[in-house]
Image (cartoon, rainbow, N blue to C red; front, side, top):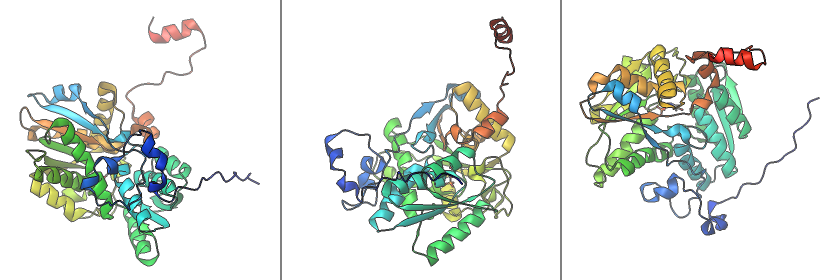
Length: 376
Ligand SMILES: *Cc1c(COP(=O)(O)O)cnc(C)c1O
C-alpha cells in the first residue's frame, strides 16, 4: 500500500485585504497593484498575486547583427514570471475576479502553461483548480508544476481543442469558472506586458513578433498598446506579427486544422478560441500571420540559447524564428520586440533532444581522461 502523504495544506487567506502585514513590509508588486487604474478591479477585489509581471526587456545583439540594417531586436522575456510563462499575468486577474465572485472552483483546458498558472493561483486563493490536458503532449515541467501546485490534473486521450470544447460545456453546466483566454479577465491582465514595454522604451516598438496559439496574447498586447496610445503614453502602435507552427497554422491557412501537429506543444492548437479578435488585431495594426516550420523554430531556439544566453521553450522561439524568416518585412532602423512566452526549463526533453551540443559522457574518472576530452 502506498503511504499517505500528510495533509499539509495551509488554509488560504480568504481575502487579500486581510494580509495587513503587507502594508508594513515592502514587497514586489504584481501587475494588479502596478496597473490598478487600467484594470477592472475595485477596492473589494481580493488581489491574488505571486508578484508576476515586471519581466525584463533584453537587447539581442547577435540577432540584431544577423538582421543588420540598423534593426534593434529586443526580447520581452515573459518566461521569467512566477510559474514560468505569461499566463501568470492573466491568471492573477482571472483568479482574483473568480475569488471576488465567490467561486469555489476553476477549470481550464491547457497545453500545459495555463494549467500550471491556474493551479498555482487557485492554490493561493484557496480555490480548487481542475485542469484538462492532452495527456501525451504536455511538456514535463508543466505537468510537474500542475501536480505539485495541487491542481486536479485530468489527462484526455485527445488534443487541446477537444479539451477546450469539454471545458466550455462543463463551465455552462456546472458551477465552475472557466479560466481559459475566453475569460475576458485573462486578456485584461495580459495587456500589462505591453504597458511594461512602453514604460521602459518610452514608446511602442515598430514591430511586435509573437507566437500565436489561441490568439489571446496577441489580442491582449494590442489592447495594452491601444490603451496607452489613447492616453498619449506612446506615439506609435506596433505592427503585430503573429507566428504559428506550420503543422498547426489555422490562422495562416484560413481554416481550422483538425489534426494540429508541432513539437511546439504550447501552440499546438487547431481552432483558436480568439480567432476573430486576433484577426482584427492583425488587420488593424497592419501586421501579418505567418507560419514557421518546426525546423525553423528549433534553429531559433538554439540561437537564442547558444548565442544570446536565453533559454525559452520551443513555442516561444516561434517569434524569433518568424523574425529570422521574415526579416525582409522589417524596415531599416526599426525597433523589434520578440515576445518569449515561456521558460525553457518547462520542456527539458526538447532541450536535450535538440541541443546542438554533445553530452560527452562515459569518461573515466581520472584527470588525464577529463583533460584529454577537454582538448589538452
Ligand atoms: C499559451 C502560450 C502561447 C500561445 O498564446 P495564445 O494566447 O494562446 O495565442 C504561446 N507560447 C506559450 C509558451 C504559451 O504558454
